[in-house]
Image (cartoon, rainbow, N blue to C red):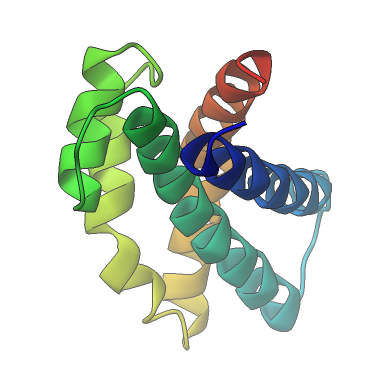
Length: 132
């Protein structure tokens, strides 16, 4: 196993652990503000692991990319992700996710994560898992 292959597979393991935590949070109802903020934080590190795992996978396949936007474009091109627009939205909303210190913003962020973003993260995880 090459170093690059080892790297993406190791990161995929961490990505899978993050997906499990986000999936557990997805099934919860009537969250407190603190719980909602926790789900948002779980999402943040899950998204970071997602694009970095994709980058590492593509690098192992000899696709050279560095920046998240380029990774998302390449992932869409290579059909690793289904909806490039949602992924670009996830990327753009990273700054917004850091501003979830009030209830309104936290609820908006939570709804995006549960209703739009989780499925995309889960789908790419499952596609990458099949590559192992």
